[in-house]
Length: 163
Length: 301
Image (tube, rainbow over all chains, first blue to last red; front, side):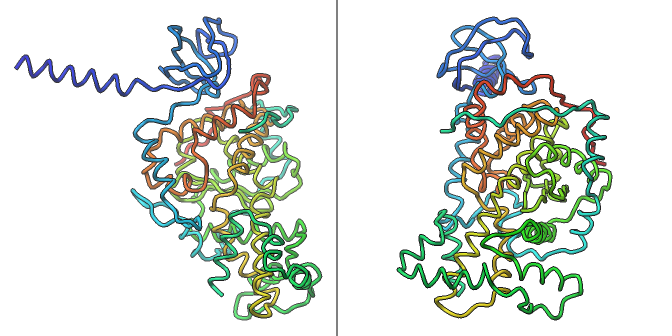
């Protein structure tokens, strides 16, 4: 009986470890912060390509552990390693889910809105008119933004080079 | 002819240019003239073949029949987008909640106002599908599924998702694919038969809904993520809204049918986040003081 309990505990422990061990790699050098906001105290740093362990998520922040230091970074600092069970299935699924012409030939799980559904659908004038009836003009949208404390700002589009 | 159309679509997907194909057949000049006849300088008074439709549908057909695929006007673009959108609505109607639809239009219109095409008559809608996806069609039409909407936790996230779709419209990503297809179809059809301009346009728009769900170039999706993020930030929102949604999408099992179409037509969220990180560099850190507005996100009834 005791043995059985120990075995159960060991199994549970192993499972929780497997679930918690989410890893990734730093896409850029960044500072580790004590809490999940940008002016929180700096408690360390990561270098580009450092291996990291992802411990927690909160909004656009990730709590990571790297080289023994733990802290928070913005979620775009880290790329998760694509080795989880779901992701492996997903990448394979996406890669094999279509034929050479780009046409979807198979989907798994509960079937949703497919490319075929869209191809065979008939134009619906009534729903289109309904959609257009909800249209908001620029002034009303501006008022709505203002009500929420939003004001527009001028930022240029990002200019970094993609890979 | 069906085979020809399939070949044309396959070629369009390979991002081949119409003239590249024509040149391979060594009929470049002939085809170019033929396509010019049919698309660029064709008669505007060609009668439509839609004779048993309602008055409204007939006028829609008129508009569609006279689209200048070589150099579409703003009105052409809107007519095409309306047809594509109405076809998607034929597959999944709007969620029957006027407050929800008005709310999404306010957020979307405000984000679109920060773009270079603020003058378009922007329309936004939530469609009744449990799929996780969103669609853009030429001329300012944007649809988001109920399945995706229900996963959102803040107005900033909604702004990010709509920003991505708005960027597709601003950059005319889908329109360009449809143009290539129409031009290719005009070229290949000429070899087989004399095809009317009206018939040609009907073919192009009939596959329009599918095109809106088809995979664009990966680079078009990455560009929409990057531009969409900036548009939401310009509108005063926290800049990480779209990134948060992409991160959430990573947690959906890829075998879940609700993301089948999304994952077939977009790069994996991991790759999209990595690209966004690369392209934004340190520019993201310079954006501060944005709002998330969790409490204002409209809750579905």
